[in-house]
Length: 421
Image 1: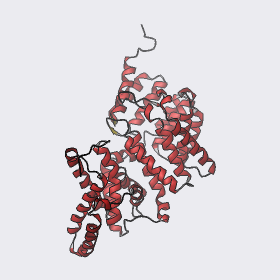
Image 2: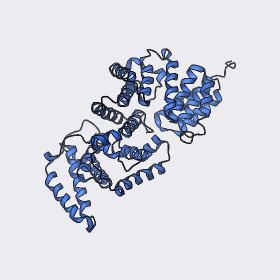
Image 3: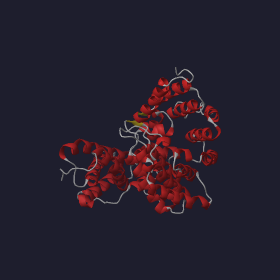
Image 4: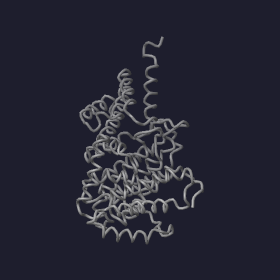
């Protein structure tokens, strides 16, 4: 039955439901490539039909039924070698899924997340595949998260699917032991999904709240399943403390407002309190990891009543520790900012030089943006102007581009010191 109105746009509903439906289909058929194709076809059919006919009363059941019909078509077309097995599965599907009310209502998204971190895959491939299946990210978005070309990421995802198929290892729900083994990859996926939602890499909006909120929801579930894991707690704290600033990050027209200029009265005090309590409880337990340190840095920012009150010395010390745990170039970039705030812009620029030879970030707009900011602090207006413009030309995010161009315009129109007359 169709015809009712939706409270959210159809594309947002499909993004939310797709991983749930994919998890359900995989639970039954355990063929990732075929299941993903079936769910994509179901989502496409919904995108075509629902705007005209109205959505069904149970959108998830509708998508699941269409995906199962597509899987039934796939089974019919299988080779003779697999025909008998396929016919058994087909009959089972027909018997179980003809009734909308028979579609299970449990959320299979978290199960899908753990399933995608398959033992046949390298951690990098598992994370990339999961970002596609669970996060709904495009290949280009995933490539930007990994700081690699889009073509490279497309090949990686394709190889991941083939590796699962050829490994002979069933694509099935993991045991408790397997969940523990895959936990670190799962946390990395959740971190990347949150990051893409908090600051989108492409498009007209600075953020995609559906992604960041879904990552937080799933991380809460993982935390409830692994309450003693300090890095799970650290990741949840990091998300809470970062997302608390969400409403202050954009102006009335969607324009980017940098941290130092945000109206801190708009920050979510309840989320900050929850995040601070979580990381305060976690850090003394002894096993400190990257997510806990990032959460601690976020807490220092959030607890400052004004930007000028920020304890940059503590932040720099935390980045010193974090830099010893990871060679992530974004961590090194943020470390340079903290060093500049404590030791001066010249020190920050010196640290940036080491990143210029790192192919993972040398062409990234954020390197140019940070360099522009530090050059401006150092008094090199012309150099800052060039870097702001260069950064603006490299980003796919329109709010970031507009902000960087605004900074460039501000510098180009400002009077040169000493020549005000």
